[in-house]
Length: 196
Image (cartoon, rainbow, N blue to C red; front, side, top):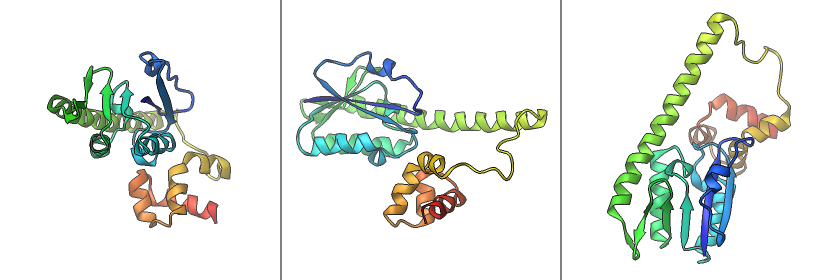
């Protein structure tokens, strides 16, 4: 059976571009989560991997390598896991498959590694530009951030930090969670306090 994995960063992003090459016989798995969230921690990715382990899926398509993630090591580990499970990964914008006749495709491995690195660099550049823009807006008095003393509702915070909540429920250390989810220790402490 064939599957297609789609990831959008936000709830209001449209996945139509990623669905453009969908075949009628593909099962579709859609995650709406940041690319920095590890693949194995995403709800639909977990369901996909479960079906792969149950030998239900043998072929997986993604529109581009960055749909798997924006962390080079995580992307390469995901590809390696798929290879070990005998699943052929096709990246549409490359026109390449990870396995050819059950053997690892060296061209895919090379290009996949390079693109995973570029994807991670793009994420870092985007974040840098965002921080520069905020700093510039603060200088002009346009950006002030959240008004001091205001608070977000418990529901909003818990929804925003679903991964933090999940790891807290697994009794991981606070510093470990901060590193895994790429948030501050203070954020993890805040979520923990709301859970308690």
